[in-house]
Image 1 (cartoon, rainbow, N blue to C red):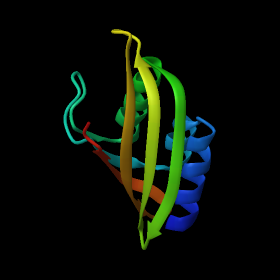
Image 2 (cartoon, rainbow, N blue to C red; image 1 turned 90 degrees about the vertical axis):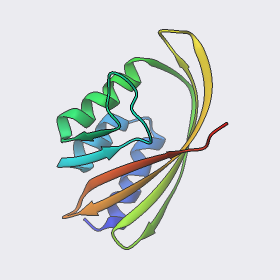
Image 3 (cartoon, rainbow, N blue to C red; image 1 turned 120 degrees about the vertical axis):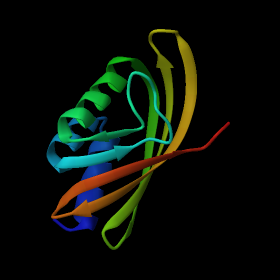
Image 4 (tube, rainbow, N blue to C red; image 1 turned 60 degrees about the horizontal axis):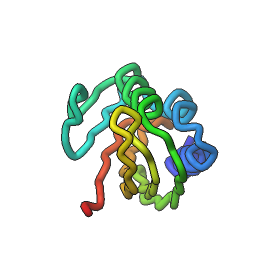
Length: 122
């Protein structure tokens, strides 16, 4: 698949709330995922499909998603950007937060090989 095809499939799945399906079908087994900072117990950088699946499962298990929107993809060569906005409650604390982040994805051999996230600070 081309970067454009991968990007559109990722956005389509995210819009349906199928984030784990996107990881399972579109990500390389050697994926590198980079957050701006560590979120203990998870490090800022995670390597491998199992680690990234675990990170996504943890996030979904620990948040109530009240609303979410996905904008994009914005494709350039082997890279694309997707913007996410979410209204979520962190289950362990009950704290509700509105989040806005952008993901920069790199495609290699028809799969997402790297994802990097950027957050808009409040």
